[in-house]
Every structure is written in C-alpha cells, then in structure tokens.
Length: 409
Image 1 (cartoon, one colour):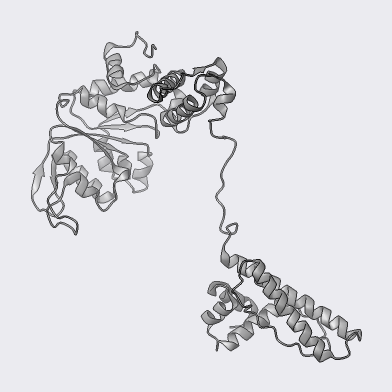
Image 2 (cartoon, rainbow, N blue to C red):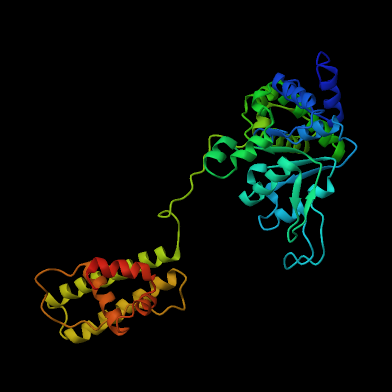
C-alpha cells in the first residue's frame, strides 16, 4: 500500500518510514520538516497539539536525527506520576530522603545524561517541580531529593502538551519563564480533522494491522464508508480513529464496510450529557424528607376524616373512634416505610391519641402538623437538635432550616 507522496522531501519520507508515520497532509509534512530542521540544533522544543494527534512521534524524530541519537531517549508522562513522587522520578533521591527511600536512586535526568528526555503532558507539572526544571534548562544543574550536592547533566529536553499554555501562564498554573525556556522552538501538530484524506490512509493501515495481528480476513471500505469517515470530526484524533477501525476490522471482518456499518461504531454526536444538578440528584436525605411529608399529609387527611365522622354523628363513642383512628394512622405510616424498603424502621413520628374537641376556627394545615411534630421531638430531646434530627430521620441541616422557617428557635 502506497502511503507516502514520493514528491515529498527525501528526509521527510525517511522519517516517516523509520517511525511508521502515515499521512500526506501539508500541515503534517510541515511539522515533520520543522522537527528535522531543529534536530541537529541543541535547543529545547515544545510540541503542541490536541490529545491523540500523534505528538509522541516528534521527539523521536528530533532524537533520531540529532547527534544524541546513540545515547538514551527517555519518555516521561508527567501527568501519570503523583505530585509527591515526581521530583524523585525526575531528579532521583538519596537513601532516607523519605519513608520508603530504602536506597539511593538515579532520576531520569541522570539516567539520560547525554541523551534526550521527552516530557509529555508537561503542563501537568507541579509548580515546585517547574522551578527545579527551570534550573536544569538554565544551567544543567539539579539536586537530588534529600541531598545538598549539586549535580550536572547534559540533557536535551523535548516537551509536549495539549494545554493552552498561554492561558495556563495567565492563570498562574505554569511559570512564564519556564514556558519561554521550553518553547525555544514550537512544533504545532495538526488535528486529524484537518488532515483530509490521511483519515482514509490511516483507516486502511489500522484495519490491515488488526487483521494481520488477529489472523482475520481483511475488510474493504466502500466510497460511502470513506465519506462517512471524512465527515466525522474525530475529537479524539488518531487515537480515536484507531480504536474505531479496530472494532470495524474485528466485527466486520471479511466484508465490504459501508457508511451504515461505520456509523455503528461512531459515538452518537447528537447525544449530549448534562451533569445533574444538586437538586436533581437522588439522595436518601431528600427521600426521607419526601417520605415525612407524605406521613404528615396522611395524618392531616385522617384527622379531617375523623372530624367529619364525629361531627355527623356516625360514632357513638368518640373516644373509642379516636383510638381506632390513631392506630390506623400508625399502621399506614408503617406500611409506607416498609414500601420504601425500611422494614426495620419504627415510625419516628409519634401518633398522639387525638383529643376530641370542637373543630378549631381554622383547619389544621400540613405545615402546622409538621411544625408540631418537630416541636414535640425537640421537647422529648431537651432541645438537642442532633438527637431530634436522628429521631425524625432527617439531616440536622434540614432540621435547622425547618426550625428557622417555623420560628422554633
């Protein structure tokens, strides 16, 4: 399969062939040429581009075409090393420098002395580590963790980031002086969506590699499938394309892949995810609050029904009817709690035996019932709000709010 344009400069074709780079996009070719031109010049280089766009190829080009090519090349993912250990990883440590330092250890800057070190995701470095790195760039000096001895290293640093470094500097998350030191030469890597037909070339390569690796019959992309691949925006760039094509190569093995087949493996771009707000999130605290409102409402309805029955003369012994109504209320409350999966919970709302008195001038409201229940709970617990909240099975914050709303302070 022809994957490179023979009209490109010979050194570009050589770099592509050596590192397995696929693509003819002018922006990609320009980035490779820039890396080749700066390779013999011992300057720091900053590679910028979106995540998954292939930034890791460029420090390899710089190292392999530089006078340092016979020395070590070490790649370090700065975002994957915990903040507490990154200084030790980069600069080394002495025995006893910290609890787990049972022996002295060389850091990457000592190991790669004379070679090249690639700092991927350099924008994730802690500010304290940035200060140490700046000293290495300025004088080649560093100090191991737990040591007072200054050591020298002869190292070339190539860094990469997908972070907006100008914004990071403005926000105080990255040192301005270090940014200017690292970006002696900038190499921008184009996103996949701007590389045109490179998408099809890469899709063919990934499908062929996958078929060879797993001994599967190859797939063939129809024109409609190619159009679908070219139309998609590829926010995850080359890394995302490889993931999608490998799925196509496995599940569509030996077939003619159409646009409909490709769509099955692409994310649904019209589906957006909106994080739930605090009010939308389900919590047991909110569930208990709703549950108690239901209980208070049930109490109110039964009280109103009891008054109606007594006032209309349907009960000869009002006291007996009151006891029966109270028992019915407690039974229904227990049923509600069990329905919500709380079989072992005894209703915390005390159902008082109703006193038969003439109806008040204004009907009892749900808020009145709730206020009275909270007041009684506070009395039973001598005003201890934490104990009252526990009895009512609501949070102290909710109880405080209701005390304030009902003027029970």
